[in-house]
Image (cartoon, rainbow, N blue to C red; front, side, top):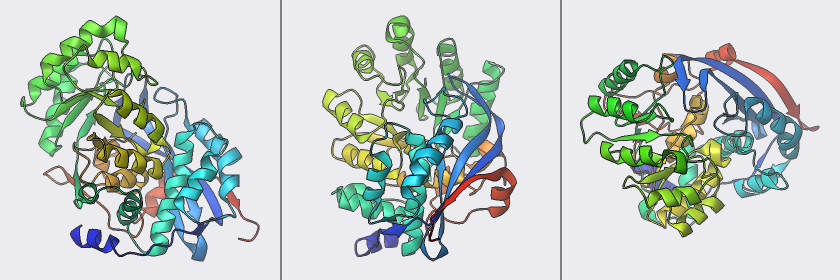
Length: 406
């Protein structure tokens, strides 16, 4: 997107916006195959779409995408729904904001955590600002990064990302199933493979996946915080023999110290996911020197602004980042797709073809991957066009709130 990148240098963007009303639409899209990680299994993508109605009738969309059960984070669909209805939406409806920063201050003042809930309304407002200015979400992201004094080198971008596949634990716990999945995904064009592991589904699973791949094919494992440093150190040490690019979040979801201790015991680099909940924690990681590889998930950190702060910090501290997903629907995926096309993202992202998750033609914004593993970034305005037939087929409005003057 060279021409658009050059245009951002001279754009004058009006960040002010007024929220006239908000709807919460609960979606439920069945997965093509069940998705299992160390903490639990999901059979469909239940999620909350936050629909913001702004000035001049502009409608914008964001997504709050925790799981139904609290096995990845402390938030769930139910808790995010309650937080939005009882606390967050009353703060923003009927109010004019001067900037995205002002919005984030209002959403976080006196409220601890609840990042997934905040991400829903926050990302919708990014879409609103982009649409109001007639630009893509990616252009708005680059504009905001320039305000953070991010170096020009880290503002460079491509008009696509390389996609990597995140392979869950087979429901039948069969290694042949895992091997077949990995082989099929590589044939489809995915540019790296990540497999989910947990205690008991670890070394043999890694060996199985590795046996299907060339030794130099990009590969890593994601434990989703399921291992214990003292109980499983020997197993974690044995993972050094599989030529993984890194181990993603092997230890407790709130931990920094044990990861630091583990980094002194093994050769394979560590990557933070669940522990990296904010720019403040990212600064602590830099100070401790625990990890030089970070997964940036917009949902986990509470929205795009916090994700941009983490990216900018990484760019100034020689930290390699890559884009993670929950996964979200296509509505949520466009945010990380836009961000992950920037030059500081060193590894293929978790953004995958919609057909991989939901089957062909079922997503709210269809994410397509070509045979070379490339997914192209929508060029706007905002996050692009919603498939309204699917939106109504898989979603239902469960709440709406309007300003008195709307």
